[in-house]
Length: 408
Image 1 (cartoon, rainbow, N blue to C red):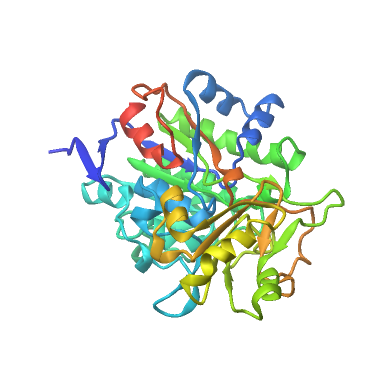
Image 2 (cartoon, helix red, strand yellow):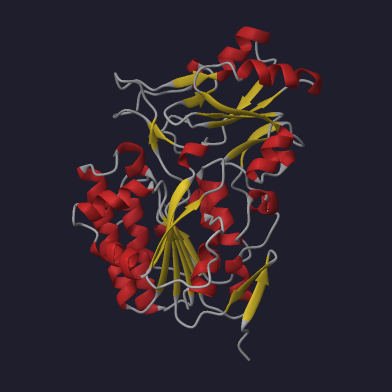
């Protein structure tokens, strides 16, 4: 007998009556959609917003890829699922490590729960860093554009991906990496018809191109064409983003950076403090590991109040919070963040030491994310949505709730 509802992480989800596709467009500042629609290159998105649901939501802060993708697929904030950055200081190991190992997950995903209950699942992500987290304990298809040619039945639930999609494996630093995600989604819907599919792109274009620019409009025109095909196949589509994106540079185009490790070293001595940048991942060419959120570790708690007060005086800082304040405000796991959490303002990023950041590959003025200023993201659906309270604060991790409980 078909299960009618599933409960996952204290939320209830109805069984789908038609295929559901949730799309996470990496770095999709709402202005990108506005500009593409105004330019006439995104008719499907325009139709979704006009006749379906056109909402705005708040993403998780830090507004980075891993915490938000995992929030979307668990339907819960990082305090529940445990992934609070791309990178963190593991106090138990005493090491700075990537947070892309499923061992750091503290909650199951909605995707895995539906697969266990008998639904056909498919997950396609641009970068392989997310694949194991998104597909953790999930029966079904799960692969990345980046390593599509390496997909096997045993590891990914599918083989022959490149032949199926009809595109070569793209460069990690390209718009085509995201196009491969959409092309694969369309081919999978046509050939396998999954009950539930999650598509997650990369923000290579958004880091380089502002809303309304030719490159940005070309990207959203490409995406719109694939969404039209999924819509024509009868899928319920919910589109959201992991975070927004803003200019982070001075008038002359140089990055506007607070090198916080240098600042703290100057105040308290060489590396008495440890600054961690959770934006750090293996793919730093387009942002130089510079974002608007950082955590600071102090050698002892007694120093924290004084440090907080002093850091607040640094020009360009928007918020400087204790671990407890940050964990409560941003729903983060307190054991995985520093003693101090710092968030810079809209047009400023935070680095460690100037000598540690190689910005030679930045071909255009820096655009990045991570702060509260990148928290507003689109939440749109190709079908009308009902039963949402007018005063409800919508989050990007409500995407599956919208798709399964309110758009059917």
